[in-house]
Length: 403
Image 1 (cartoon, rainbow, N blue to C red):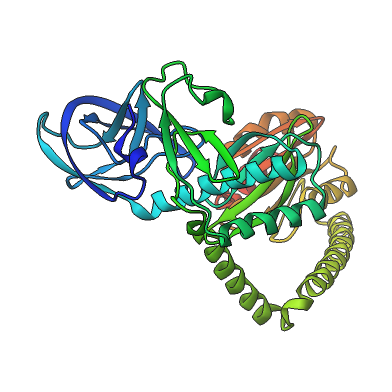
Image 2 (image 1 turned 180 degrees about the horizontal axis):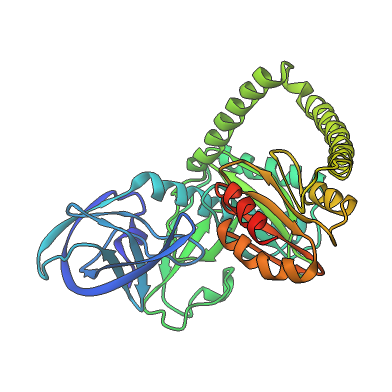
């Protein structure tokens, strides 16, 4: 069936009735963590909420006052996932999240326009595309796109936008007209008339997604650039409509922040950052050299101490594994048990336990446990990462008692 959202992409509210409501689960990822939500799958008599498909994400909105978290297509039906049950037969008002919908309309329609002109102007076919949260990508069947081609393509798509070209949607019965339009084929479970997206004089294409009614509604398209794709293909990255405005606003805000931080105008930012990076690398190199010299001096100071014990313990906030290993190498660990740490005194850090092989193998696991860390040892060295150095003094006491 053709959903109401496909017949009128600009409809924001709609009254319908609940056909079914069944318990269901929704698996989703929030802040990198996977979780399963319990709720209900609801089917309506008709809907203005678009189910994900054709490269376009689903719509969000409300059924009554119940938020719709996901809309999927099952055969000819749209299934809405909600957290609260709805009464079958109940008349409900569906409200669309218009900002999300219009964004998807602009990106999807923009993709159709770019795809059509990339083919017409350069002979580059679109093999796939992705509508991303911040930017979208078109996969072109070519190893590369020249900068001059990218510029010409951007000028052409924006010229069509300024020309106010109509973008009508028509329905046809198969197989009439189907062979005359661009398509990657129909789903196996497709039923009913075939929906054609017709950019007048530019392209005709089968598509189930939501679209603008005139190219002028795209406002503007910006081609950000290209990246190497898979199997000799090129990914073309673009923004359409309101995303271009948001991108410009964010870029200007970043520019003003950099002016304040770098104390230079926007045209000098790249040069200023390059100088800073070179200065930082030089400082890091100098710092590393000083740490190495310090490590040798620390070890020599211990060896020259006539009252030195059998256990040497040392902590420094700044340092790395190389710093600790230099100290251990300078000290005769066949006679001395060496315990070294770097990092925050009460926080995470690195540790090294070095000494006689048998003793290190015996004490290492307990030291690892006390530091709440991860590590391993061999040949008289046991080292790793400590989640907390808070018990460092307790470890030192433990080694003094057992070393």
